Amino acid sequence: MKSALIALGAVLALSGCASYGGYGGGYNAYYDDAYGPFYDGYWGHGDVFWYRTGRGHPFISDEGRHFHRQAGTGFHGVRGGMHPFHRH
Image 1 (cartoon, one colour):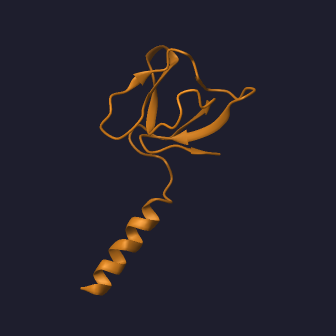
Image 2 (spheres, helix red, strand yellow):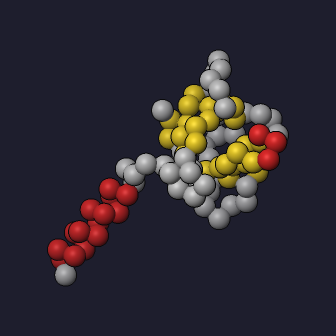
């Protein structure tokens, strides 16, 4: 039983290192941190980014255009796909 729990813990720990493919596939964006930390998001119709601040929270439209598809001054890269984002 103990070895099964250790194996499960290892699987869970390694899953945090998995690629950010997720639902809808992975994607790149550039973000200026205007909204603070966020959980996940997606590019919607009209090239608008929708994000949410936590699992189970509603998605919010990036009305202020703080997410871009290309790099710019003051923006850092983020990569995700319905998972927590990380800088790259």
